[in-house]
View (cartoon, helix red, strand yellow):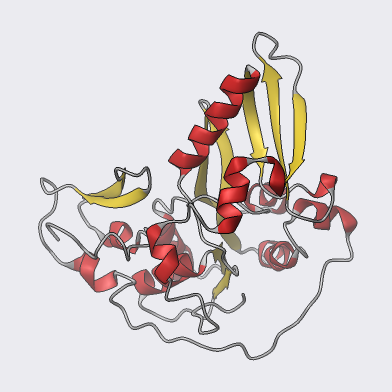
Length: 282
């Protein structure tokens, strides 16, 4: 679709359009404010229109209100420490993996000095840790929806975890009901940009003369509130990794994120911030 699939202010970057494009003409760029946006390569685009057909902002996907609401948590203290809340997704994922299924979720890591969040495919319990806990920046979907479709058509049980708009993006891309698909979304506070977050990390490094090697958005070792943590080493001493823990009031990025100051523009008009969902579990 040469031009624009949907207006940037409404686009959630769910990437259903990119997964549907037969020419790989759609990717992720950055706007002048540092937020991710969908970019179309007009040289590759053949104007087939598949992107507009699967756009989650255009599709009328059936929604459901909650049937029942439960409160609960794992009885395993170690599982609770590895998850942001009660480890519900972790326990659901373990059941899927133990029955030969696959899970998809958001993994965050530092790569070449930059923190990135990407959806990945997990095939065993040992790999599960990477997609647990919260990440407050946009997770790049990549070709996740295409991989999920292949797994579903091969008869595998699939669990997808993500934000409500990513769940909507997956359903829009598939445009078909699969009995072997389970979708779990989160009650989302909004997401911000990796550019803004990495600028924040670079300011910390510059101010303290350190190199950050990892970041945890919900650190259970410091308590059960909104605590954060990063690993680092001082310049010139890579062999001595230290850890800095701090509450939400201790970092400017965390303060602005939790206040809603730096969320993506579409988050302020999110059509999924209600009880009508496309997922099986929230």
